[in-house]
Amino acid sequence: MKNQKGFTLIELMIVIAILGILIAIALPAYQDYTVRTKNAECLNIAAAAKLSVSETAQDRGDLDSVTASNTGYTFGASDYCADVAVADGGIINTVATATGGEVMAEFELTPDFTAGRIDWTCAETAGAKASQIPAECRP
Figure 1: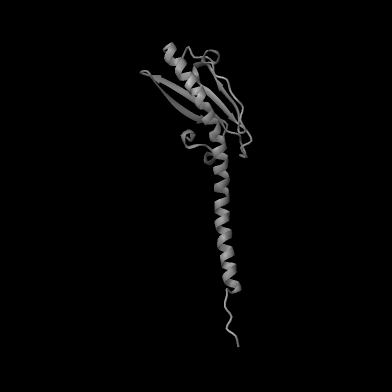
Figure 2: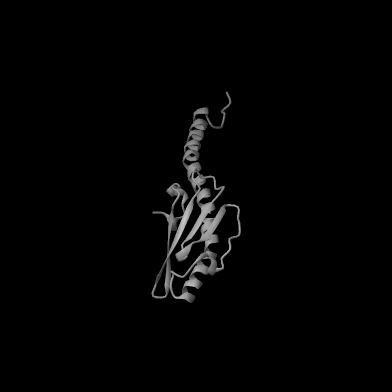
């Protein structure tokens, strides 16, 4: 009788079961990661708006005089960001699009002008999943 070498059927089924469990855990995490990076694109595009608001606030001396028209910021469309707009008081609103998330994320960046320095706080306002929101905007 020949001595056969190789894996038994049960060993192969165990390996397949382990792979299935790992995939079941990794796939949702990867999907959240891809949506989160697409949402982060809006925040990256908003950096130009933040610079415009900061320069206008420094020039005028306060945030109350900052408006959409006097910052000079204009939005350039991108694949995953539908809009970045500057509101009165320097508040910046962004709207993500085509990210693959159940809810399209909307971010509100609020400036705080204290002692010549501007600090920004970010809040997600549309109710997107926390795991799909970039870290700087999570509650």
